[in-house]
Length: 109
Image (cartoon, rainbow, N blue to C red; front, side, top):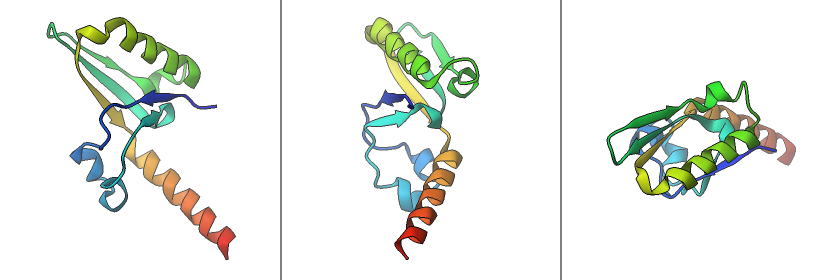
């Protein structure tokens, strides 16, 4: 089972939408599956910045372990966090949606 990261902003950033606008422009996001995250950039109120390399960490940890670590980070540092930037693997999202759509359409014939 894959893990997910909850997402407060509902719309994707312009630079993500630009990768596949006909699909991404109207999406409202509630959560992001861990397997689609490249990294998470966290900006703290004191000026510190952290980058969590999700894709790299997937080699060492399961998706559930990554999900728990990210959730724990937000719970522990929540009040100190100024901004969070989720970097999404848009190529993987596009490839998976295209593959699943083709499979779905073949079954409908």
